Length: 199
Image (cartoon, rainbow, N blue to C red; front, side, top):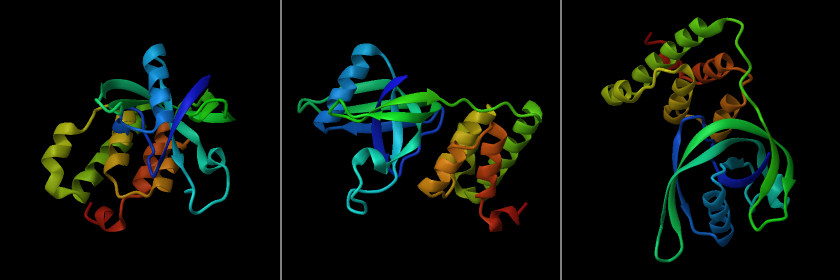
C-alpha cells in the first residue's frame, strides 16, 4: 500500500482515537488535497528524533510503525490552512519510504493484531482491569471516564493509552504489541504502582 505520511513529534495514534490536526505547511496541504481527492487514509508516524538532535535525513528520524488516519472532517480557512479531524484505524509497518513527493510517503504493510490463544474472555477481563485502574488513577474524572469508556477491549486499550501518563515511547510500545492481550498487558504494566496498591 502506497501511503502519504504525516509525521508528528510525540504523537502515537491508536485505533478509534480522534485526533485534531492543523494543516498549514504547503507539503501537508498537498497531502490533504490528495486525501480529499481520493478518499484514501494517510499515515500518522512519530518523529523519533528532532532535526535539532540528529543530522539524519527526515525519513530516517521517523518511526517505522504507524497508524492509518481516516479523514472525518476538514475545514479550510481563508488563508489556505485547514483544521481537520481524523480517526485512527489499523496499524502498519513501513517497508520503504517514498521521497518523490513534497510530503513524505511510504510503502506500508498492514499489521493486524495476532489472535489471542486465551480468547475474548481474557481480553474482556484485562480491559475491565485497565478501566478500574484508570478510575483509581483519576478519581476526579471518574464520572466522565465511566460515561466515555468504550465497551470493546480494543477501544478500551486506545482509551487508556490516551489517559495514562505515558511517554511517546511507551505509547508506541503498546501500539506495537503483537496481540490485543499483549497491548492491554503492556498498558497495565504502565499503571503507577501506587494505584495498583489501592486495589
